[in-house]
Image (cartoon, rainbow, N blue to C red):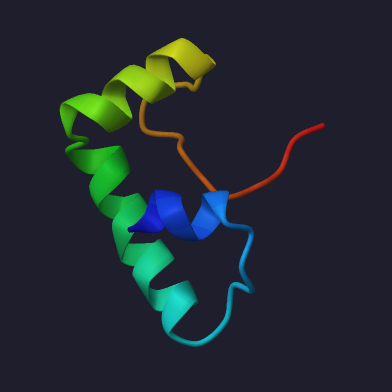
Amino acid sequence: MATAIAADIVPMNGENRVLAFYGLIKANENPNLGIKALATLGGAKPRCISTTWYL
């Protein structure tokens, strides 16, 4: 759910903010295989997945 909220670029307020917050905690502490693969392919540092946009 957190990845869908971030990918859709919806406003990060209300329930979207809460769902993204807890989803990112889960993705950083104990990611499923899909999130782990995406993070590895994307070059993300371990336990450092966030919704910040880097250009």
